[in-house]
Amino acid sequence: MTGRILLGTSSWTDPTLVKDGGFYPTGVTSAEARLRFYATKFPLVEVDSTYYYPPSERNSVLWIERTPSDFTFNIKAYSLLTNHPTRPDSLYGDVKAELGPDVLGKRFCYREQLAQPLVDQVWQRFRDALMPLHSAGKLGAVLFQFPQWFTISRASKSYIEECAARLPDYRVAVEFRHESWLREENREETLDLLGQLKLPFVCVDMPQGFVSSVPPVAAATADDLAMIRFHGRNTTAWNVKSDTASERFKYDYTAEELLGWVPRIEGLATQARETHVLMNNCYRDFAVRNARELGDMLAADGAPVFAPASEGLPGI
Image (cartoon, rainbow, N blue to C red):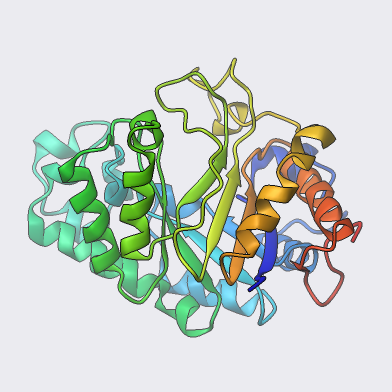
């Protein structure tokens, strides 16, 4: 089996890309026009806005209408569902109405602070909002990027199982941000767990040397999907708070660094029906340009790179 390879970026709306990236032509200024243009260049995109605010059925329908029939969306799971701090004003109105001032008065809230029926509501609405994309065949995977305090433990493993059970119709992909999961003594156990659950392990290229660092292990734990996300290697900014998230991902990959991933991506493509390659170094045009360059390398090596029917990946 050699599955197709889809390349894309983790955002089509990053402010630095829109303002200074030189990617969008003159006149492509609306949200609709940008997505339509992006979809002529890449077959895949990751939606990161759903991490900050839960998705809506209306947006799912608009995304369907604005992209070709073979376009794929990966959706980043809402922060409340991945155990990240969540802004109370991002919650559904009627859910907020059930919360006391001790929660609403704080800058962030956490899943454990909500009554279970409210958590159940959030799960159900998140699932319902994505159903149009799933029905249209445009939902690739729901990305659960867990926080760095989500360490390997029995409770954490149980929660991963719960996430998969909560979204039985969708492909749930798992990305870790704590080094304990991929330590040498835990690596086989972690990959076996995801394999048993048939959940794709998200391979990463990211800064090393931090508690939140995961080594660049290339492994496929599901037959239907493998995934790689490129976060850049900006060790200076990785753990530094900044006004915008894009500062952490301000990294322009060299040709040599990208070329090092070509055989690993091709290896994953022999183990899964589809391999998603996403550049998350979304600063100006870094992500779109690096995706093009990596696509060129894969195509030149004869890899089955899938491109939009309209124009295809630039340079391919």
